[in-house]
Length: 375
Ligand SMILES: Cc1cc2nc3c(=O)[nH]c(=O)nc-3n(C[C@H](O)[C@H](O)[C@H](O)COP(=O)(O)OP(=O)(O)OC[C@H]3O[C@@H](n4cnc5c(N)ncnc54)[C@H](O)[C@@H]3O)c2cc1C
Picture: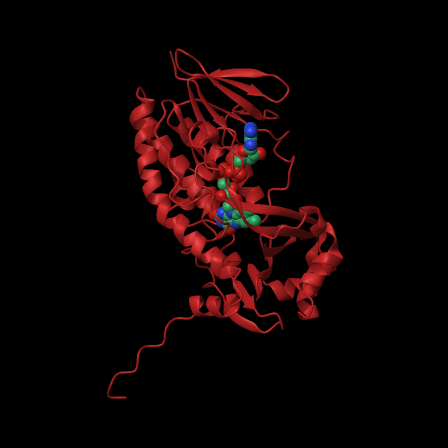
């Protein structure tokens, strides 16, 4: 009898896993809570790193499509101070594809969805409960009461995973608040803001706060406000005046991004403790944010996709022994993630510190050589 693999969550991790399993001739079903592929805006751009996100796409046979969709020019980044002075301006080498090219999240997710046989993703199925069966395997219960059975369950259901509590009782804790705003048709409506932001990432760094923006491929500017996690109702950040007050005294050239941004959407960013691990439990594991929720400083999606690639490769190597595959994957993943989670926590702390601008300039500025004693 073939093993029935269920993946909870059709984000970047879950879809990459289903795709690579499919390439190895292993079927899996993805249960996704959203109603369809366009149900929700997928957010801004990601830069995919050669050793993680890009490696996973190569394993998924999608590197050619990635190269045609990615935007190396999106690697440009600008860092300014609250007065609008440029502190750092990095321009990627023209025509180079060697670094960490950016791709719009929506494009990346569509690429993965297109690569799966139809019927792999079952939409509008939010996993609500998991009941282990006495003889092995699980019964899955979804919102609305539908049920399904599986032999192996992979939780790829993100920050608030419904599968995670079966393996560990850690709960994520808040680390920052992010408010996102959108400026559509930016080239036509706000050419001055397009000019300010440039082709890639833009950050204006103040004391304990960051105003950032990204230019997406579809002429949208995604604006982000990052703040320390404060005990204030999230909904209060939907009010533009509250947002503008936070940036009182900043150059109007910068706060114009808040004036022009539509639909302020606040959310708390949570993290799991670094070094989280669990005792292996048969036929069950986690990948991506469900396994290791880290501050959003550029690793989460990359590591989610690499988790998927590594787990799929282990299933393919030991097709009749899923527990050997899961154990091997978990041990390697815990070891890989620990230093990355620690580094992400340090960067997060630095970005929202009172001395963020000076710290970040030091971070990006190559050290001058030490003077020799003869000088
Ligand atoms: C503001 C911000 C910026 C970021 N920037 C970057 C970046 O530049 N680079 C980077 O590498 N990472 C970045 N990240 C992190 C990255 O978004 C995540 O690490 C990545 O999306 C994790 O992938 P995943 O597949 O594990 O989870 P997700 O992408 O969250 O996917 C989980 C999926 O599961 C579904 N789901 C949830 N619960 C259920 C349920 N109960 N039943 C069924 N389905 C469910 C969700 O609808 C979703 O589709 C950023 C994160 C944030 C918040």
